[in-house]
Amino acid sequence: MNHNQETNLEPNFAIDTQDDEIIYVSKSEIKRDAEALKELGVELVNLSKNELEKIPLDEDLIYAIELAQKIKKEGYRRQIQYIGKLLRSRDIDPISQALDKLKNRHNQQISLFHKLEKLRDDLIATGDAETIMSLYPTANRQQLRTLARLAKKEQEANKPTKTARQIFQHLKKLSDTE
Image (cartoon, rainbow, N blue to C red; front, side, top):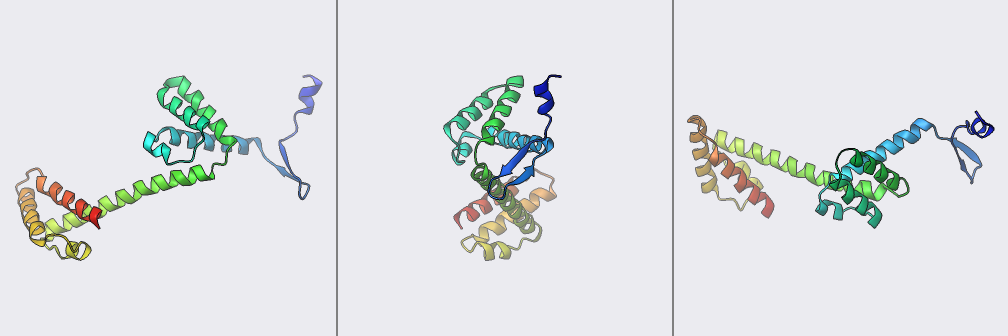
C-alpha cells in the first residue's frame, strides 16, 4: 500500500461554510442515493414518449432515456447507471413531482373505474337507477333499467356479460361528460 492510498482512508465529509460544521456522509448513504436515482431513471425509461414530454428534462437526459429505451441486456444496465449519474447533477424535485402527477392521474382513473364497476354491479343487482341518476342527472333512466334487466338475464343464463360491458361504457361516457 503506497502513501497516497493510506491517506485516502478518511470518510467522505461535506463542509458547511456558513457554520463551519462538518457533516458526515457515509458510503452507504451515497450508495442508497445513487440507487434511488437509478430507480428514478428506470421509471423515466418506462414512460411513453407522450408522458416524457410532460416531465421537465434537459436534452442530454432525454437523449439518454430514449437510448435506454432502445437498448437491451447489459447495455441497458449501463445506460441506466449513466442516467442515474446524469440525475445526480440535477435538481430532481421537479422531475419527481411531474412523475408523481402522472402516477396520480393513473391512480385517479383506476379509482374511477372501480367506482363505475360498483355502480354497474349495484344497478344490475337491484335494478334501481336512482344512485346513478343522482350522480349523473343527464343519464337516461329508461335505458339504464333496460340494460340492467338484460344484464341480469344474461347473468342468470350464465351467458357472457355483453350488456354489463355496455352499461360500464355508458357510465364511463356519462362520467367523462360531467
